[in-house]
Length: 402
Image (cartoon, rainbow, N blue to C red; front, top):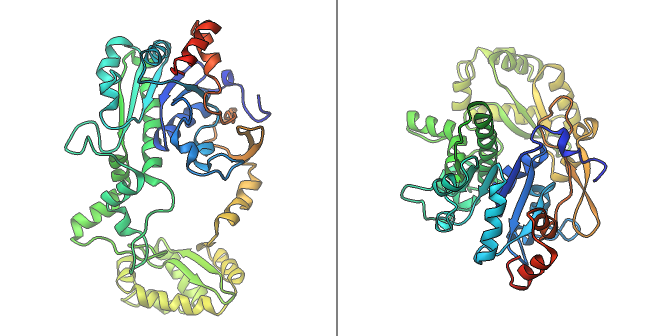
Protein backbone atom coordinates (compact mmCIF):
# COMPACT_ATOMS: atom_id res chain seq x y z
CA UNK A 1 0.00 0.00 0.00
CA UNK A 2 1.38 3.47 -0.88
CA UNK A 3 2.52 5.50 2.10
CA UNK A 4 -0.25 8.07 1.60
CA UNK A 5 -3.08 5.61 0.95
CA UNK A 6 -5.34 5.24 3.98
CA UNK A 7 -6.48 1.71 4.83
CA UNK A 8 -9.93 1.18 3.37
CA UNK A 9 -11.29 -0.28 6.60
CA UNK A 10 -10.63 3.02 8.37
CA UNK A 11 -12.77 5.00 5.94
CA UNK A 12 -16.51 5.85 5.95
CA UNK A 13 -17.43 3.65 2.97
CA UNK A 14 -15.38 0.63 3.96
CA UNK A 15 -17.37 -2.54 3.27
CA UNK A 16 -19.19 -0.99 0.30
CA UNK A 17 -18.51 -2.62 -3.07
CA UNK A 18 -19.11 -0.71 -6.29
CA UNK A 19 -19.09 -2.36 -9.71
CA UNK A 20 -18.83 0.12 -12.55
CA UNK A 21 -18.98 -0.26 -16.32
CA UNK A 22 -17.60 3.19 -16.95
CA UNK A 23 -15.65 5.21 -19.42
CA UNK A 24 -14.55 8.78 -20.10
CA UNK A 25 -15.22 11.29 -17.26
CA UNK A 26 -18.66 11.50 -15.60
CA UNK A 27 -19.13 8.00 -14.16
CA UNK A 28 -15.42 7.52 -13.32
CA UNK A 29 -15.45 10.83 -11.41
CA UNK A 30 -18.40 9.65 -9.33
CA UNK A 31 -16.85 6.28 -8.50
CA UNK A 32 -13.40 7.71 -7.77
CA UNK A 33 -14.92 9.84 -5.05
CA UNK A 34 -16.55 6.73 -3.59
CA UNK A 35 -13.12 5.05 -3.69
CA UNK A 36 -11.60 8.07 -1.93
CA UNK A 37 -13.96 7.33 0.98
CA UNK A 38 -13.00 3.66 1.18
CA UNK A 39 -15.46 1.92 -1.16
CA UNK A 40 -14.07 -0.96 -3.14
CA UNK A 41 -14.54 0.07 -6.76
CA UNK A 42 -14.22 -2.66 -9.38
CA UNK A 43 -13.89 -1.03 -12.78
CA UNK A 44 -15.00 -3.29 -15.63
CA UNK A 45 -12.99 -2.58 -18.80
CA UNK A 46 -12.77 -3.99 -22.30
CA UNK A 47 -10.04 -6.60 -22.75
CA UNK A 48 -7.06 -5.03 -24.45
CA UNK A 49 -7.40 -1.26 -24.51
CA UNK A 50 -9.82 -0.79 -21.61
CA UNK A 51 -11.49 2.55 -20.94
CA UNK A 52 -10.92 4.72 -24.01
CA UNK A 53 -9.97 7.62 -21.73
CA UNK A 54 -6.68 5.78 -21.20
CA UNK A 55 -5.72 6.92 -24.71
CA UNK A 56 -6.76 10.60 -24.48
CA UNK A 57 -3.11 11.59 -23.99
CA UNK A 58 0.16 10.16 -22.67
CA UNK A 59 1.46 13.04 -20.58
CA UNK A 60 1.66 11.49 -17.07
CA UNK A 61 4.50 8.97 -17.29
CA UNK A 62 2.89 7.55 -20.43
CA UNK A 63 -0.62 7.61 -18.94
CA UNK A 64 -3.56 9.84 -19.79
CA UNK A 65 -3.97 12.92 -17.57
CA UNK A 66 -7.73 12.29 -17.61
CA UNK A 67 -7.38 8.64 -16.61
CA UNK A 68 -4.98 9.14 -13.71
CA UNK A 69 -7.20 11.92 -12.34
CA UNK A 70 -10.36 9.81 -12.39
CA UNK A 71 -9.28 6.26 -11.58
CA UNK A 72 -6.94 6.07 -8.62
CA UNK A 73 -7.74 3.58 -5.82
CA UNK A 74 -9.79 1.36 -8.18
CA UNK A 75 -9.39 -2.25 -9.28
CA UNK A 76 -9.44 -3.03 -13.00
CA UNK A 77 -11.18 -6.19 -14.24
CA UNK A 78 -11.36 -6.92 -17.96
CA UNK A 79 -14.52 -8.59 -19.27
CA UNK A 80 -15.92 -9.06 -22.75
CA UNK A 81 -19.55 -8.27 -22.01
CA UNK A 82 -20.59 -9.46 -25.46
CA UNK A 83 -19.62 -13.01 -24.46
CA UNK A 84 -21.80 -15.26 -22.31
CA UNK A 85 -18.84 -16.04 -20.08
CA UNK A 86 -18.06 -12.39 -19.50
CA UNK A 87 -21.68 -11.64 -18.71
CA UNK A 88 -21.80 -14.55 -16.27
CA UNK A 89 -18.81 -13.13 -14.37
CA UNK A 90 -20.51 -9.74 -14.23
CA UNK A 91 -23.60 -11.39 -12.71
CA UNK A 92 -21.40 -12.99 -10.05
CA UNK A 93 -19.92 -9.60 -9.23
CA UNK A 94 -23.29 -7.87 -9.02
CA UNK A 95 -24.60 -10.52 -6.65
CA UNK A 96 -22.11 -9.32 -4.03
CA UNK A 97 -22.13 -5.59 -4.85
CA UNK A 98 -23.84 -2.67 -3.16
CA UNK A 99 -23.78 -0.24 -6.07
CA UNK A 100 -23.71 -0.64 -9.85
CA UNK A 101 -22.74 2.35 -11.99
CA UNK A 102 -22.83 2.53 -15.78
CA UNK A 103 -22.56 5.15 -18.47
CA UNK A 104 -22.95 2.89 -21.48
CA UNK A 105 -24.23 4.13 -24.83
CA UNK A 106 -27.96 4.98 -25.01
CA UNK A 107 -30.07 1.86 -24.59
CA UNK A 108 -27.12 -0.50 -24.16
CA UNK A 109 -27.71 -1.24 -20.46
CA UNK A 110 -31.35 -2.13 -21.06
CA UNK A 111 -30.45 -4.41 -23.98
CA UNK A 112 -28.02 -6.26 -21.71
CA UNK A 113 -30.55 -6.68 -18.91
CA UNK A 114 -28.74 -4.09 -16.81
CA UNK A 115 -31.53 -1.53 -16.57
CA UNK A 116 -32.77 -0.54 -13.13
CA UNK A 117 -35.98 -2.60 -13.32
CA UNK A 118 -34.24 -5.77 -14.47
CA UNK A 119 -31.52 -5.42 -11.84
CA UNK A 120 -34.10 -4.91 -9.09
CA UNK A 121 -35.62 -8.32 -9.89
CA UNK A 122 -32.28 -10.16 -9.74
CA UNK A 123 -30.47 -8.13 -7.08
CA UNK A 124 -33.03 -6.39 -4.84
CA UNK A 125 -30.43 -4.83 -2.54
CA UNK A 126 -28.28 -3.42 -5.35
CA UNK A 127 -28.35 0.34 -5.95
CA UNK A 128 -28.12 1.01 -9.70
CA UNK A 129 -26.83 4.34 -10.98
CA UNK A 130 -27.16 5.33 -14.62
CA UNK A 131 -25.28 8.31 -16.08
CA UNK A 132 -26.83 9.32 -19.40
CA UNK A 133 -26.60 12.14 -21.88
CA UNK A 134 -30.17 13.43 -21.97
CA UNK A 135 -32.00 10.98 -19.69
CA UNK A 136 -33.26 7.44 -20.22
CA UNK A 137 -36.65 8.69 -21.43
CA UNK A 138 -37.85 11.63 -23.47
CA UNK A 139 -37.26 12.73 -27.05
CA UNK A 140 -33.44 12.72 -26.84
CA UNK A 141 -32.93 9.50 -24.89
CA UNK A 142 -31.20 7.82 -27.84
CA UNK A 143 -28.80 10.65 -28.62
CA UNK A 144 -25.13 10.50 -27.70
CA UNK A 145 -23.87 13.36 -25.57
CA UNK A 146 -20.36 14.60 -24.99
CA UNK A 147 -19.26 17.46 -22.79
CA UNK A 148 -19.01 20.21 -25.41
CA UNK A 149 -22.27 19.14 -27.04
CA UNK A 150 -24.00 19.62 -23.69
CA UNK A 151 -22.26 22.94 -23.09
CA UNK A 152 -23.74 24.05 -26.41
CA UNK A 153 -27.22 22.58 -25.79
CA UNK A 154 -27.61 24.26 -22.39
CA UNK A 155 -26.54 27.67 -23.70
CA UNK A 156 -23.37 27.76 -21.60
CA UNK A 157 -21.16 28.41 -24.62
CA UNK A 158 -23.29 31.44 -25.51
CA UNK A 159 -22.34 32.98 -22.14
CA UNK A 160 -18.63 32.14 -22.21
CA UNK A 161 -15.96 34.08 -24.07
CA UNK A 162 -15.63 37.65 -25.27
CA UNK A 163 -18.24 39.88 -26.87
CA UNK A 164 -16.78 38.94 -30.24
CA UNK A 165 -16.47 35.17 -29.84
CA UNK A 166 -18.09 32.39 -27.81
CA UNK A 167 -15.91 29.77 -26.13
CA UNK A 168 -16.18 26.42 -24.40
CA UNK A 169 -15.44 26.21 -20.71
CA UNK A 170 -11.86 24.99 -20.41
CA UNK A 171 -12.65 21.89 -18.33
CA UNK A 172 -15.23 19.12 -18.82
CA UNK A 173 -17.86 20.97 -16.83
CA UNK A 174 -20.91 18.94 -17.94
CA UNK A 175 -19.15 15.66 -17.14
CA UNK A 176 -17.95 17.00 -13.80
CA UNK A 177 -21.43 18.23 -12.88
CA UNK A 178 -22.98 14.87 -13.73
CA UNK A 179 -20.27 13.02 -11.81
CA UNK A 180 -20.86 15.15 -8.73
CA UNK A 181 -24.63 14.58 -8.80
CA UNK A 182 -24.15 10.84 -9.39
CA UNK A 183 -21.81 10.73 -6.39
CA UNK A 184 -24.22 12.60 -4.10
CA UNK A 185 -27.15 10.56 -5.42
CA UNK A 186 -25.37 7.30 -4.65
CA UNK A 187 -24.50 8.48 -1.14
CA UNK A 188 -28.15 9.43 -0.61
CA UNK A 189 -29.31 6.02 -1.87
CA UNK A 190 -26.85 4.25 0.42
CA UNK A 191 -28.13 6.30 3.37
CA UNK A 192 -31.75 5.54 2.47
CA UNK A 193 -31.03 1.83 2.20
CA UNK A 194 -29.24 1.84 5.55
CA UNK A 195 -31.87 3.86 7.44
CA UNK A 196 -35.12 2.80 5.76
CA UNK A 197 -34.27 -0.50 4.15
CA UNK A 198 -35.47 0.73 0.76
CA UNK A 199 -33.44 0.68 -2.44
CA UNK A 200 -33.68 3.60 -4.84
CA UNK A 201 -32.22 3.70 -8.33
CA UNK A 202 -30.17 6.77 -9.25
CA UNK A 203 -30.15 8.45 -12.65
CA UNK A 204 -28.25 11.56 -13.70
CA UNK A 205 -27.93 13.08 -17.15
CA UNK A 206 -25.18 15.39 -18.31
CA UNK A 207 -27.77 17.74 -19.77
CA UNK A 208 -29.86 18.07 -16.61
CA UNK A 209 -26.79 18.37 -14.37
CA UNK A 210 -25.48 21.30 -16.38
CA UNK A 211 -29.02 22.68 -16.74
CA UNK A 212 -29.07 23.05 -12.93
CA UNK A 213 -25.83 25.03 -13.09
CA UNK A 214 -27.38 27.25 -15.78
CA UNK A 215 -30.32 28.21 -13.56
CA UNK A 216 -29.26 31.77 -12.73
CA UNK A 217 -28.73 32.93 -16.33
CA UNK A 218 -31.84 30.98 -17.33
CA UNK A 219 -33.99 32.82 -14.77
CA UNK A 220 -32.36 36.12 -15.65
CA UNK A 221 -33.20 35.55 -19.32
CA UNK A 222 -36.73 34.31 -18.69
CA UNK A 223 -37.70 37.28 -16.53
CA UNK A 224 -35.73 40.07 -18.21
CA UNK A 225 -36.25 39.03 -21.81
CA UNK A 226 -32.51 39.33 -22.52
CA UNK A 227 -29.77 36.87 -21.70
CA UNK A 228 -26.64 38.04 -19.86
CA UNK A 229 -23.99 39.23 -22.32
CA UNK A 230 -20.61 37.63 -22.96
CA UNK A 231 -18.13 39.93 -21.24
CA UNK A 232 -14.88 37.96 -21.10
CA UNK A 233 -13.42 38.11 -17.59
CA UNK A 234 -16.06 40.63 -16.48
CA UNK A 235 -19.18 39.50 -14.60
CA UNK A 236 -22.34 39.72 -16.67
CA UNK A 237 -24.58 41.04 -13.87
CA UNK A 238 -22.19 42.63 -11.31
CA UNK A 239 -19.92 45.66 -11.76
CA UNK A 240 -17.14 46.26 -11.12
CA UNK A 241 -16.09 42.62 -11.29
CA UNK A 242 -13.32 41.68 -13.70
CA UNK A 243 -9.69 42.01 -14.69
CA UNK A 244 -7.67 45.15 -15.29
CA UNK A 245 -4.06 45.51 -16.45
CA UNK A 246 -1.55 47.11 -14.10
CA UNK A 247 1.51 49.18 -15.01
CA UNK A 248 3.77 46.10 -14.98
CA UNK A 249 1.55 44.39 -17.59
CA UNK A 250 0.02 41.90 -15.15
CA UNK A 251 -3.74 41.47 -14.86
CA UNK A 252 -5.50 41.94 -11.54
CA UNK A 253 -9.04 40.75 -10.88
CA UNK A 254 -11.18 42.58 -8.37
CA UNK A 255 -14.76 42.10 -7.23
CA UNK A 256 -17.19 44.51 -5.55
CA UNK A 257 -20.16 42.67 -4.05
CA UNK A 258 -22.04 45.37 -2.12
CA UNK A 259 -22.43 49.11 -1.55
CA UNK A 260 -20.06 49.18 1.43
CA UNK A 261 -17.27 47.79 -0.75
CA UNK A 262 -18.14 50.20 -3.56
CA UNK A 263 -17.87 53.13 -1.15
CA UNK A 264 -14.47 51.95 0.06
CA UNK A 265 -13.24 51.49 -3.50
CA UNK A 266 -14.39 54.99 -4.49
CA UNK A 267 -13.04 56.79 -1.45
CA UNK A 268 -9.82 54.92 -0.71
CA UNK A 269 -8.74 53.51 -4.06
CA UNK A 270 -10.18 55.81 -6.74
CA UNK A 271 -9.91 58.87 -4.48
CA UNK A 272 -13.39 60.15 -5.34
CA UNK A 273 -16.03 59.50 -2.62
CA UNK A 274 -18.56 61.45 -4.64
CA UNK A 275 -18.88 58.56 -7.08
CA UNK A 276 -21.01 56.73 -4.52
CA UNK A 277 -23.83 59.26 -4.90
CA UNK A 278 -23.51 59.70 -8.65
CA UNK A 279 -26.78 58.24 -10.02
CA UNK A 280 -24.82 56.38 -12.71
CA UNK A 281 -23.05 54.32 -10.05
CA UNK A 282 -25.31 54.48 -6.98
CA UNK A 283 -26.54 50.87 -7.21
CA UNK A 284 -25.36 47.55 -8.58
CA UNK A 285 -27.84 47.66 -11.44
CA UNK A 286 -26.81 51.21 -12.32
CA UNK A 287 -23.15 50.24 -12.42
CA UNK A 288 -23.93 47.34 -14.74
CA UNK A 289 -25.80 49.73 -17.08
CA UNK A 290 -22.76 52.04 -17.04
CA UNK A 291 -20.18 49.26 -17.03
CA UNK A 292 -17.94 50.89 -19.64
CA UNK A 293 -17.61 54.07 -17.58
CA UNK A 294 -16.94 52.11 -14.38
CA UNK A 295 -14.32 50.02 -16.18
CA UNK A 296 -12.66 53.13 -17.58
CA UNK A 297 -12.32 54.62 -14.08
CA UNK A 298 -10.72 51.46 -12.72
CA UNK A 299 -8.58 50.76 -15.76
CA UNK A 300 -6.97 54.20 -15.56
CA UNK A 301 -6.28 53.92 -11.83
CA UNK A 302 -4.87 50.38 -11.99
CA UNK A 303 -2.72 51.15 -15.05
CA UNK A 304 -0.93 53.79 -12.96
CA UNK A 305 0.47 51.27 -10.40
CA UNK A 306 2.24 47.93 -10.38
CA UNK A 307 0.05 44.89 -9.74
CA UNK A 308 1.61 44.16 -6.34
CA UNK A 309 0.89 47.69 -5.12
CA UNK A 310 -2.68 47.52 -6.46
CA UNK A 311 -3.40 44.24 -4.68
CA UNK A 312 -1.85 45.40 -1.42
CA UNK A 313 -4.06 48.49 -1.36
CA UNK A 314 -7.17 46.51 -2.28
CA UNK A 315 -6.37 44.07 0.54
CA UNK A 316 -6.03 46.98 2.96
CA UNK A 317 -9.49 48.35 2.15
CA UNK A 318 -11.17 44.94 2.07
CA UNK A 319 -11.76 44.48 -1.66
CA UNK A 320 -11.48 40.89 -2.95
CA UNK A 321 -8.75 40.60 -5.56
CA UNK A 322 -6.36 38.15 -7.15
CA UNK A 323 -3.75 37.85 -9.85
CA UNK A 324 -4.77 35.98 -13.00
CA UNK A 325 -2.76 32.76 -12.75
CA UNK A 326 -1.81 30.35 -15.48
CA UNK A 327 -1.90 26.61 -14.74
CA UNK A 328 1.77 26.48 -13.68
CA UNK A 329 1.16 29.25 -11.17
CA UNK A 330 -1.87 27.33 -9.88
CA UNK A 331 0.34 24.27 -9.37
CA UNK A 332 2.71 26.41 -7.29
CA UNK A 333 -0.09 28.14 -5.33
CA UNK A 334 0.87 28.84 -1.72
CA UNK A 335 -2.51 27.65 -0.41
CA UNK A 336 -1.99 24.17 -1.86
CA UNK A 337 1.52 23.98 -0.43
CA UNK A 338 0.66 25.61 2.88
CA UNK A 339 -2.30 23.28 3.47
CA UNK A 340 -0.36 20.17 2.40
CA UNK A 341 -2.81 19.24 -0.40
CA UNK A 342 -0.46 17.14 -2.55
CA UNK A 343 0.17 13.38 -2.31
CA UNK A 344 2.18 10.86 -4.30
CA UNK A 345 0.12 8.24 -6.16
CA UNK A 346 1.51 5.21 -8.06
CA UNK A 347 0.73 4.93 -11.79
CA UNK A 348 1.20 1.92 -14.09
CA UNK A 349 4.80 1.24 -14.98
CA UNK A 350 6.27 1.87 -11.53
CA UNK A 351 6.32 5.68 -11.54
CA UNK A 352 4.43 8.00 -9.20
CA UNK A 353 2.54 11.20 -9.82
CA UNK A 354 1.63 14.12 -7.58
CA UNK A 355 -2.14 14.30 -7.06
CA UNK A 356 -4.43 16.65 -5.18
CA UNK A 357 -6.31 15.47 -2.13
CA UNK A 358 -10.13 15.49 -2.46
CA UNK A 359 -11.54 18.90 -1.48
CA UNK A 360 -13.80 17.66 1.35
CA UNK A 361 -11.99 17.16 4.66
CA UNK A 362 -13.66 14.82 7.15
CA UNK A 363 -12.30 15.33 10.65
CA UNK A 364 -10.18 12.41 11.77
CA UNK A 365 -10.25 10.78 8.32
CA UNK A 366 -7.56 10.70 5.66
CA UNK A 367 -8.86 9.86 2.17
CA UNK A 368 -7.51 6.87 0.34
CA UNK A 369 -4.96 7.88 -2.31
CA UNK A 370 -4.30 4.50 -3.91
CA UNK A 371 -2.66 3.66 -7.19
CA UNK A 372 -4.04 4.01 -10.71
CA UNK A 373 -4.66 0.50 -12.12
CA UNK A 374 -3.26 -0.92 -15.35
CA UNK A 375 -5.81 -2.49 -17.70
CA UNK A 376 -6.99 -5.74 -16.14
CA UNK A 377 -4.45 -5.51 -13.31
CA UNK A 378 -6.81 -7.15 -10.80
CA UNK A 379 -8.64 -9.58 -13.08
CA UNK A 380 -7.10 -12.79 -11.79
CA UNK A 381 -7.41 -11.80 -8.13
CA UNK A 382 -11.08 -10.82 -8.46
CA UNK A 383 -11.94 -13.99 -10.35
CA UNK A 384 -10.16 -16.07 -7.71
CA UNK A 385 -12.23 -14.32 -5.02
CA UNK A 386 -15.34 -15.35 -6.95
CA UNK A 387 -14.18 -18.98 -6.74
CA UNK A 388 -12.71 -19.46 -10.22
CA UNK A 389 -9.80 -21.86 -10.35
CA UNK A 390 -6.54 -21.00 -12.15
CA UNK A 391 -7.53 -23.41 -14.92
CA UNK A 392 -10.91 -21.73 -15.31
CA UNK A 393 -9.28 -18.29 -15.41
CA UNK A 394 -6.93 -19.46 -18.15
CA UNK A 395 -9.87 -20.86 -20.09
CA UNK A 396 -11.69 -17.52 -19.84
CA UNK A 397 -8.58 -15.81 -21.11
CA UNK A 398 -8.19 -18.26 -23.95
CA UNK A 399 -11.78 -17.63 -25.01
CA UNK A 400 -11.23 -13.84 -24.94
CA UNK A 401 -13.77 -13.36 -22.16
CA UNK A 402 -11.28 -11.51 -19.95
